[in-house]
Length: 156
Image 1: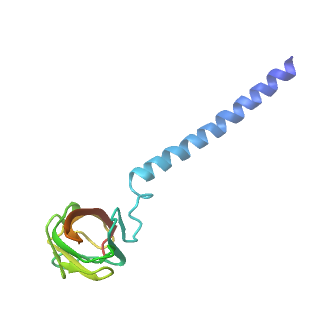
Image 2 (image 1 turned 30 degrees about the vertical axis):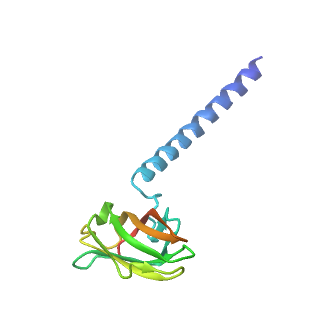
Image 3 (image 1 turned 180 degrees about the horizontal axis):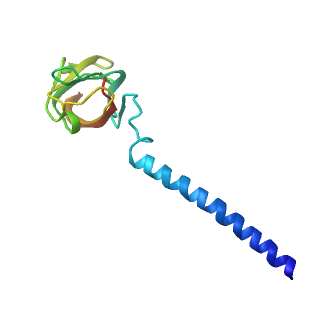
């Protein structure tokens, strides 16, 4: 019986020692996660959430020169002509958004420029929700659609 209790004590000491070490690693991981080290802002500019009007990710650029502005290209993912009626942006670029071409055929691209963005420094993270309101004509019917998404990345 004495031998069994010593084995139990050794196992308990082993679990306590490594339990504290695992707990410390977990706490450090949570703190780093809260500081955004493991966040989505990894320096790569990405667009998420858009369904028919796609953002060409290599074209995303948040320029930190004066004035700060966000530019990116969109492509019409619909198979037919669309007419953009309005657009909004928010987050770090809650300001004026202009599109170079409001009428896009299927597969055609246009450049979007958001001016008056927040004054961010190089390599800071940005997050801009975008909404594009457009109409599409199918036969004699006009259908109104809204395409929304987010553009996330790092300032250049």
